[in-house]
Amino acid sequence: MRLPFAKFDPGQAGRVVPPTGFTANLTVLTAAAMAFLAVFALALCFATDRLATRWSDSLARSATVRISAPTEQMQSQTDAVLQVLSETPGIADYGVLNNDQMTGLLSPWFGPDLPIDTLPLPNLVEITETAVGFDSEGLRLRLAAEAPGAVLDDHSRWRRPLVAAASRLRLLGVVSLLLIGGAMAGMITLAAQAALAANTQVIRTLRLIGAQDRFVARAFVRRFTARGIWGACFGTGLAMLAVASLPAADTAGGFLTGLGFSGAGWIWPLLIPVTAGGVAWLATRLASARVLKGIR
Amino acid sequence: MSSQRKIRGDVVIELQNVAVGYGGTDLLSEMSLKLVPGSFHFLTGPSGAGKTSFLKLCYGELTPSAGHLSLFGQDVRMLGRDDIANIRQRVGVVHQDCQFLDHLSLEENIALPLAVTQRTVNRDELRELLGWVGLSAQAQALPPQLSGGERQRAALARAVMMSPEVIIADEPTGNLDWEMSLRLLSLLVELNRMGKTVVIATHDLNLIRQTKAQVSARVLRIAGRRLHLAGADL
Image (cartoon, rainbow over all chains, first blue to last red; front, side, top):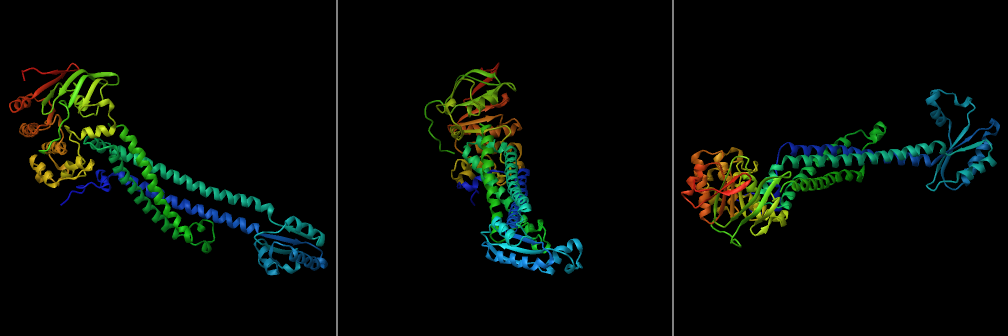
């Protein structure tokens, strides 16, 4: 039979650190809890990014031409507008909204049985831009010349605040991730310091029998890095299961139900245990250096 | 156990007008002493006189506030932390409260000085050492499962694991009955006969008398913040 560290192996240095106890659980639990929150922060970050992109794209690439004209001129002005649109570069698609589409637009306010034929409603032409987009000022001038009753609405009035809101949401996601990442680092650092403080007697004993600082530091750093990684793996796994079990966005349609990852996005949470391990490594290294400084 | 490193020079620990203090007040002062290889010293004095502080000086846990202290020919003030660790591999220390790692077995604790210095444990030597201190049957026990006497003997075994030149024991028999104290002392005497320098702090004058019958021991006394060579009344 050989002693566990009969032949010295750096990996066995961690055996001198008590394997269990309050501080061990504290490190694992802290890493797990913070990793769990970090996964949700990451998911929030992705969700806000997707939402912001969707809002920006969909609003930026659509416009409407409203044609208000006497009944006898309505058709001729509509034809003129369609002619102008067909000649305007940067427009991918356009079309006059039919009665059903108009009913759909108005039904939230007037109900589904609106007699749309009897109302003096303007004609609406919906425009979808290409990726390059069109010159809205030029189009507006041409429409004014060729169809005086036509007004181009490129949504810029209410697109701007929405795009700003979307950008703020994106920023919110990043800030949340940074805050939780920072909190994770802080919590793991505190747990490592508490653990080191609780093991001062062990460190004192090791120094007494001739252990050099690097042996002591390595023993604690290895043990607490492993605990940090293990806890973060557990928390990350649990959070990924929780995120995966959320309803899909297209089922419930809300913003929060869009919280999650898709495709290669699922790789990102796997970086959290690695980050937690790095944080634990650094925190324990700094904490052990500080504790060792107080023990001769 | 029988192998021993050659000590360079003729003094292992030397103090010249050494003072040690806490918070600006000297606890001990004007201490001068040379410990030569193979010598046996007792250190006595009332509680709180500074015996433990003196011993801490001898293994580099305290640095003098004044005077000159050299351990194995090296000026303590010039030693870095790694140098101190190296010194402690040459000085075996037995504390009254025996500090062990409670999650490791007794034999792992005894072999710990080798593990922390990246040396291979010779299983036969370890078994021999356990037998020498009478703890073969407790090799796999955890430290909290041991009695006071067993812990003291285990601490002694750990202290000699690296075959140090100097053994320092701080009140090693403080918690032991007379019979166990004599047994532990006989182990220290045996080590001294092997050539180890032994320094024991104790209150127990009977123990000192008993030892002086077996080995040539000098008795140091700390009183009035000074270190004295005790008279022949002991």
